[in-house]
Length: 190
Image 1 (cartoon, rainbow, N blue to C red):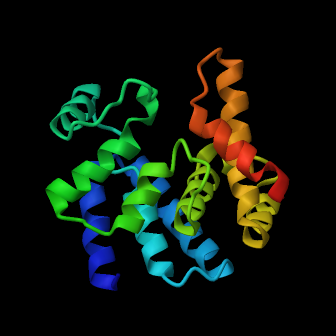
Image 2 (cartoon, one colour):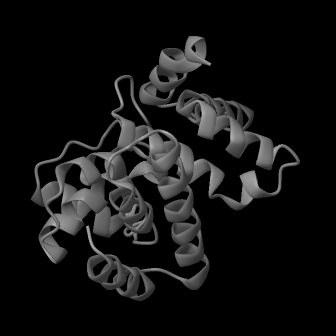
């Protein structure tokens, strides 16, 4: 990843997303780079780029996601609609922008639901997405959370999974099994 590529994708997301969503992506990118450095991830610019790109299809309509899933023979029946975007983003980036970095695409695909065996970039983006949210930024514990994630990336996974599970339970909505797997796989690692 180089500065020209990052600049190119910043321009692309500014065309694909609303200004407030672009701001979120830039916050996530900055946090991802910060956590990459803190956890000795060898490609901090790749983490930054994953942050920029992670929500590229978030504001697309349901028909867009379904169309791209069907075109790619992707089974989406068990995925909550609000989690379509990380899966469609992978196909969209490959098809429209010829983006082929598998590690970055994996992180983008896993940034919402998580999973049991996330690699380091997956974990960095998952935690950064939560801490880059307006919800997290408004919490009095925010700075403490960021410091904790710098020390232990598993804390970021735990925090996002826990908040997601509690929020969905409060709304009487289904919790995807991957979110439980994320929580269960890291709860003893913090």
